[in-house]
Image (cartoon, rainbow, N blue to C red):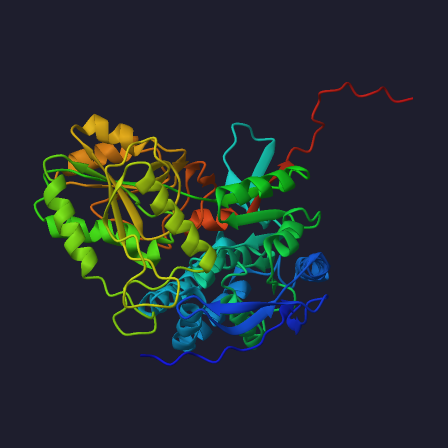
Length: 506
């Protein structure tokens, strides 16, 4: 088993340097797999937010913006590529930090760090390409005007990110924001902030201009809320719960401040009876809900099975679930670690007990693994006998829990798939690709997977509909999140425009 890493004691990263929180408070860091306290992080308050926003605003306006906001995209790309290189250099250490901070298996954390580096590289390339897209001419039906478009950074952005993929979710926002020329205040979840603070150390190491990225840690009401309501923050990008998203929208609305929200989900995975390889479909069903301990906003946690294969499929699903290695996430081969915290553990257990009391059947799991006496571990859980009125069908669990319903017809499957207030993702598995394409069009979500679940590609848009939020991250759409479009129009004729009559000369 890999040795746990040393936990550095960091302050808040503000204005290119480190400082202790104004009130001197700190929050303990708990390893969720062992329940041990392994360090602490600063607990920022509104006073610290003021300092961070001021540093970001100063960096944005410095020398008329020429140092960052109006520098060439190629200039900003150099810094993004330098960050990516440092991530790669420190990948093992960062993955270990992520593992002990969040409870996810080490192999998953390593994959996350690979994705972090790739995301910075991708947006470095888009930053360079942005230079060539400026002054794009607009075709007009008249000759007296010429018009072009500028894409400008939106300003100082507040980035509030979750605990399930701590550094990766932060990077999804930081990389495009910096590529666009924005300056930022990043507030990661207090439940998993270690790698985000290390991002500050990397920015210091590569010489990112002071104040371009500021990182504050702390509780949501103390550190997150002041960012959302701050008059000098020009945009908020948030990933997290729908309830918190509503609060952020309310705060931002007071200043008509733009927001982009990536919120909860209760995504369906529809599996038809024509699948020739049951095990292939079973593995995708498991990956869709048990990867990262099911703590994934897009988890396909509602499994819809055609009645002809339901019994056979569930038998195999249970066999595969029994074979998952649940262990300390630092152990080699671990495929299911702990959930993030005691609070989340108890919440998931409550969902399971409520499902049982409402009449559902816990086909597999639902308890702590017998071989693990400490840590916030929950067995992969499969729940059948579910009705559409049950809590387990309607609400996001955010844990390794999948609920199952059986359908007879394609139209019934589509109706069940869309029976949710959420609309982040969905999937369909069938050997009939025409059917897959047909269903992809009618599932009400921002993402649809065909014959798979959860592939996440930096080049492709990510985001949802309905109560899953709005706006898109990743791909070129992620960059557009942080750009403002300006029309510039010039009158080209030498003579008067001629709308008003020229007064006669005296």
